[in-house]
Image (cartoon, rainbow, N blue to C red; front, side, top):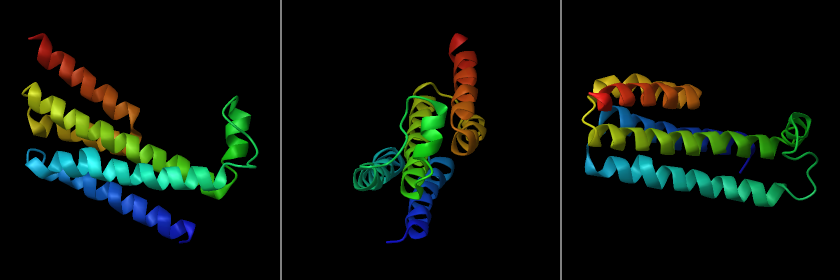
Length: 137
């Protein structure tokens, strides 16, 4: 499968998970799909890309220059993107579960989910700010 198809497939898997989190967050199957199945499928794709392309790759994780060199290999750049997709979705599923446990209204969580989808750590930061405000009272 070519890299563009893998990119499209991984993105579609991620978007499906996010749609479940936003539109049907409290259905029993939502956490199974968005919190487990989709991130694990993405993790398997990531694993395949890493192990089939890391050997002989230049660069590494010791400096920004090393990371830039590593990501010049398109297969590893795609693996890096899928890493983001998997972890951000996993965090979004956790935010949804945690919000339910803490009785945070879903409409308040939706902007955090959108931010987590688009800008990962910023969405998590927003969610923790809301969670802290809610659980302090």
